[in-house]
Length: 336
Image (cartoon, rainbow, N blue to C red; front, side, top):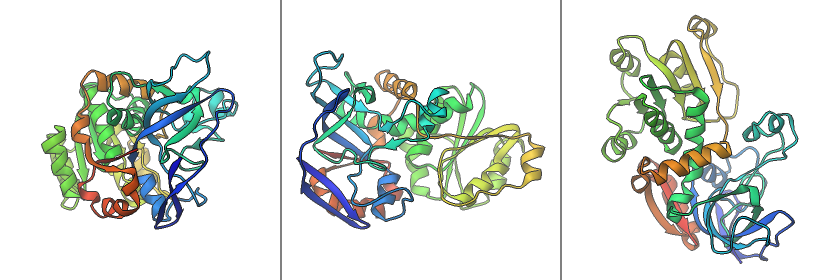
């Protein structure tokens, strides 16, 4: 089978590999679509801390069942999305029904080879029925589920003032599901083209330029009270620390982005707000289902989110350009 392999930083190749064989409890999926995300870009650039090369990237996946056991509820040819978080089922997090924080988690395309290949063997439990969705829509479920999980973790309620710091794909996903819950959502970013796209194509009426007087702008919007819930999806330690200042007294700060290093907050600022500080990691199977239902119901503007298409064969040539054009890329999807 054909696979796209990151041999080392800045070196993608197309190579032939043996087709996978299904172990007991596994299904073979013919991969049709692979969404590209910041993790893939970081792997390509050599900035991922938990990765060994060579690696087949790809964790935003959709395809068709190629081979399955006779006892499976899935059938050959069925369209599916894939939950890329492979968990142990026995650790303390799994026992607490938090498999997204599994101690021994293996994420497809990161800790083990992923879906930038024509065929992939995965546990049957990782499959999500994608009947009724397009293959492109199904490949977008995973990144949207991260936003849905963050919003569920924060228990965002109707009428809340919500600020999303970082208007990349994950931040936009947080904004979409907070808006779906009835919150009043403001997006902010230093990349003005992203904010313009969010206003013009995704229906976010309130955006704030983070390169200007952001503190003053946000205070003016809220009568000085700031926001009930702030989602930080920047992946920047300095931005995360600054986001505390945008939280209302009695409010919540949800860290969705991840960055290497130590995060330092002002203790008086944290305490005087009685801040609820939450980390949000990956997503639950229930979040995948929430996204699937939202797409089927027409709640998610998937056509506008999908900004770039390419063939998997062209990834070695096209990936550097997508990184360079990040201001104008929401979701790029490669096709097999």
